[in-house]
Amino acid sequence: MKHLSSALGLVALSYLSFVAAQNVTISLPSAIPANATVLDPRLCSMSLEFQSLEYYAGELGHPNQFTHNVVKNIVDRVGQPPAMRVGGNTQDRTYYDPSVLAVRLPAGNASVPNPTQMQIYVGPDFFKLAKNLPADTMVTFGVNLKFNNLTDAVDEAKAIFAAFPKGKAGRVVLERIEIGNEPDFYFDGVDSYADRWTEFAQNISQAVNLVPGQGPYFQAGDFAGHSANNFSITRLLQTDIVSGDTGARINTVAQHNYMGNGATGTISTLLDKSLVRGSLANFKSDIAYANSKGYTYILGETNSFYNGGATNASNTGATAIWATDYSLQAATLNITRTYYHNNIASGYQHYYPAVYNIWEPVGNVVIGNITTTKPQIQPQYHAFLVVAEAIGKTGKSRVAEISVGSSQVSAYGIWEKDELVRMVVINQQPWTYSSTGTRPVTTIQLQGLTSKKATVKTLYVPYADIAQGLTWGGQNFATDSGLPSGKVVTQNVKNGQINTLATSVNLITFHK
Ligand SMILES: *[C@@H]1O[C@H](CO)[C@@H](O)[C@H](O)[C@H]1NC(C)=O
Ligand SMILES: *[C@@H]1O[C@H](CO)[C@@H](O)[C@H](O)[C@H]1NC(C)=O
Ligand SMILES: *[C@@H]1O[C@H](CO)[C@@H](O)[C@H](O)[C@H]1NC(C)=O
Ligand SMILES: *[C@@H]1O[C@H](CO)[C@@H](O)[C@H](O)[C@H]1NC(C)=O
Ligand SMILES: *[C@@H]1O[C@H](CO)[C@@H](O)[C@H](O)[C@H]1NC(C)=O
Ligand SMILES: *[C@@H]1O[C@H](CO)[C@@H](O)[C@H](O)[C@H]1NC(C)=O
Ligand SMILES: *[C@@H]1O[C@H](CO)[C@@H](O)[C@H](O)[C@H]1NC(C)=O
Ligand SMILES: *[C@@H]1O[C@H](CO)[C@@H](O)[C@H](O)[C@H]1NC(C)=O
Ligand SMILES: *[C@@H]1O[C@H](CO)[C@@H](O)[C@H](O)[C@H]1NC(C)=O
Image 1 (tube, helix red, strand yellow):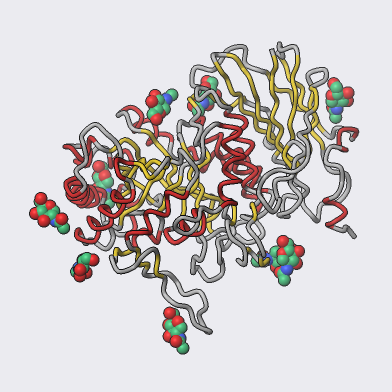
Image 2 (tube, rainbow, N blue to C red; image 1 turned 45 degrees about the horizontal axis):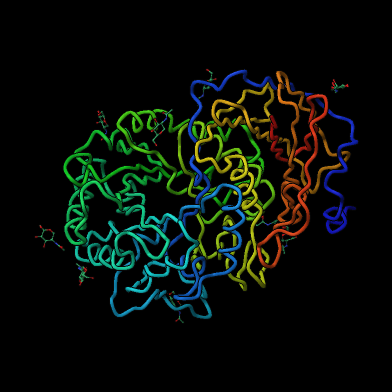
């Protein structure tokens, strides 16, 4: 019988003396691959359902300190905070009401304590909450298209621009306006969506006096992912949506993606190398088409499993492994950002708040079957740290996948000025609470290693299906403040070899 608390207390690096169960050789490319893509420092970004902004940002004039702390950890590594998109299902259930100050949700009662949020009313102060976010946060605000009420959408847009005079609220930047969420659910074809979108974009541009050639820009698409009725980004960019002043204001197209349904999602999906690749490969032709026409392609909303996530999967150690692979895989396909979705006070009754949240900025909330007493990070937050550190601070690093002859090990190279500077090695072999025997270790043999010295930092995950006990480079980030405790631990690569635990990530740094 295993005792979780003592297992979590193990010295994370004691596996080094274990016998390798298998060996994998990785050949380091001698030159940067021709198809390497530029890494956006905001690759791992945040998407928030409307009412969640109040929790993540904090009340007016009272920035949420936990959010500031966990974002600081990211800024320390990559130089920029995650971008924030405020949108999702609630975007098309949000109505502007000037008599409401920030947010008004439907009231709960004893039989339905968390009613489904069919209607959210927001007033002028709601959009001003964004000013509380960390400096240099790039914000995208959604506008309600489904309501099909131009007056309401224009009022909403005016309130957004009033909160961002000259496109800025303090040091927070209004990057884009997203008109409509997942329109493939409520338009019968891409052409009718494009026509209506253009009408909304024209009225909004006029009402807020947008200046040609200057931000904020518009984001279009935001499809849930239906290929039925021709809702693809390629088809969209062949409609009239691209024409005129409003077309010229689109610089980014977005698609949404999840690995599956929250009702059935499991960790084995998250740790499946080929499923991750298959899920993202679906978008290759759309990305290529969008890029050929000059548009940036993003996953404007994504996460492990839709409908708020899957309990016992979306809030476990497996997500830290998954989101590292998923984000970097997306980047190699030139998906410049992955906006991970978060929802607090969701009203999706079984997921209150959503189990896939990256961090919980407030206490007294229920995550899976656990009630938190204070703000906390979730395991997936570690992927934000690892990816941030892999990208680094130059703003010009590039990434390509390095092929590995294993279905359970993935590798990505990161280049700066054509030089391989870092490499992420992901061991996707599952190690769970019910696994027995010795935890498997795969020895990675690096071929073609030329740097004099290489060091490794490890993301330690006690069990793929447990939320607690993760450390990154020996440091614990699951602290009350969200700031790390403990000293950074790195190891030297010896004889071109590193030992990787089943269910772990290793970041190798090549020193000159
Ligand atoms: C892995 O490689 C090391 C070093 O080359 C070798 O000593 C060991 O026997 C190999 N293990 C397996 C399982 O092949
Ligand atoms: C409780 O709230 C639900 C959802 O808003 C509503 O349908 C129901 O009538 C309410 N029950 C009572 C007793 O007010
Ligand atoms: C939309 O724009 C048209 C054309 O300028 C204008 O007549 C109409 O009043 C606008 N509607 C709203 C709700 O702003
Ligand atoms: C459209 O929105 C305006 C402003 O919120 C509201 O007064 C009006 O009743 C709405 N129209 C419809 C048909 O709902
Ligand atoms: C989708 O597009 C194709 C080719 O443009 C067309 O033949 C087909 O009828 C369209 N399907 C729908 C459902 O609109
Ligand atoms: C990736 O997308 C950017 C736009 O975001 C574009 O400038 C660049 O050319 C694309 N890169 C590749 C390799 O297609
Ligand atoms: C989560 O895992 C625990 C332990 O295996 C189990 O008792 C519980 O039923 C699971 N919860 C769900 C929602 O699957
Ligand atoms: C980049 O090129 C390599 C080598 O041709 C290929 O294996 C890989 O699939 C390409 N990657 C992408 C994202 O197209
Ligand atoms: C709650 O989840 C944990 C694992 O996360 C599990 O050990 C425990 O049995 C679960 N409790 C209930 C009541 O489902």
